[in-house]
Length: 289
Image (cartoon, rainbow, N blue to C red; front, top):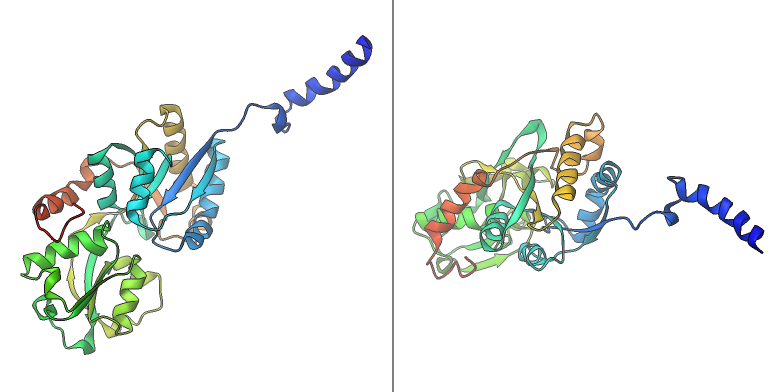
């Protein structure tokens, strides 16, 4: 019996030393990810699949996807520790950072290494609306109450122009930027707020649209980690993201995304977002601030 046991052990030990024998290795780290719903959950999962696959290869860390219905949902999941990593917009980042603390992994960049984007307010050219002051009594669409370009910045501009939400005949919150743009384009609302990047995501004839206002440059959205994520994991993920960004395969990896790479970011990059929040605090219609 002793000889049989030794024989079996001699067969098992080489397998445990082999890197392909996963069942003999220690359990692999699994981290949870959530992304603001700028697409449907399925759309996000499909669009980011190549990037996630590459991130697994670079880090040896497995990632589990958690769907989100709202921007606030991602913030709450980071707060409670339900997710370890999140992709958020600037307003959501400032809310999370100032409320409970998160760590910036990377800022995103778009085509041509562009680091900024703009909030816009749009209408159709045939709407008869020529300026922001003409919006009183009209219907209007925002995206999400925690969106930077779909709510925070345009509302600040509207209020500075003497227009409150109560001045509209109807206000709709349509969650995604393309939804707000389409609602205006198809005439479901008279005007709306969105990100200028939404023009690149759907087939809209820009010649039929009028941009009534465009914001100052805003640093693009960013990836963050919960503040207590172990430093070793944080550094490994951050370095992997920067390597993926510089990879010769990056065009293929980011093919389905408006994100085309990453840069290291810092908290002060989003001070202009904080300035807008401060200006709007105390206004009754901004109950989420």
